Image 1 (cartoon, rainbow, N blue to C red):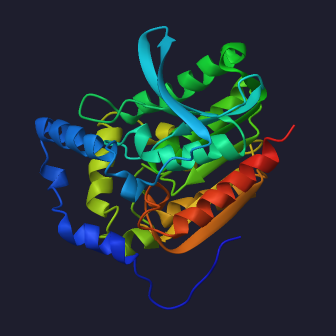
Image 2: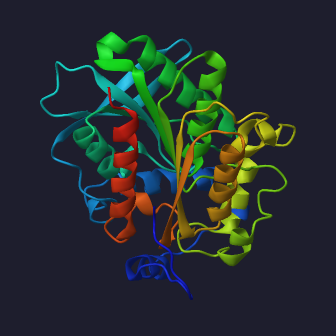
Length: 326
């Protein structure tokens, strides 16, 4: 699956223009109050109607709404996508976790999630997880992802889902959350049908930057190594063990749900995805690796300017449809 090319590659023109017009913050010097202001402004922008020109227009065959999960020690918002006209059916569940790490919102993924809900059909639940900051390590988002999955499955009848047909789907930092959920599911006896990891970041240890793609695409328009360094600093505070949030270093990757790993080639973490796919394969977990030449990090949430997003969406839908069938 996927295509290959030779010779130099460049991001699509729209991405290059966006990058040229945008002023990059000094990530490594950003104080907490500046991060909070940046995140609020950026998420407001990503959630606006105008942003649909870039993030894509939702599928009209699906409904979307916010719901709140009442968890034992907190409330957690999720964005729920359902196919129109399937109210009586018990549908598969796809738990989705958006990317961004220290920024991001489920709304930026309305395009792909509404399409999956309508076309599979399925109930897609996207977790508005806690974002990393100086007070919130990545482990909080990992807990949010797992607790949301556990809550929905434990209330399957209320949600109108078939708990035996469940998949997880993550993008970028969200792929760390879903990859770790897939590992935890095996330990918990939960049989997931599939996992989809898009431009995954899977290594926050001291080797996180020791990949050729990190050097080759260090200053890519949609993710830079400086952003990754900033994210890693927040995600894994001093004194914590980065292996616990790095799926690549899990002790055992055997017996996991079949995986689709989607890698855009112009991405600092491209080799994270390739390496993780190889580790899954070596452990005996079924895996498909698809690459998208000319696409950069986070391309799936930018179909308005990255044409490769449509092919990737189709690949994800086909993969999930086959594995979530009755």
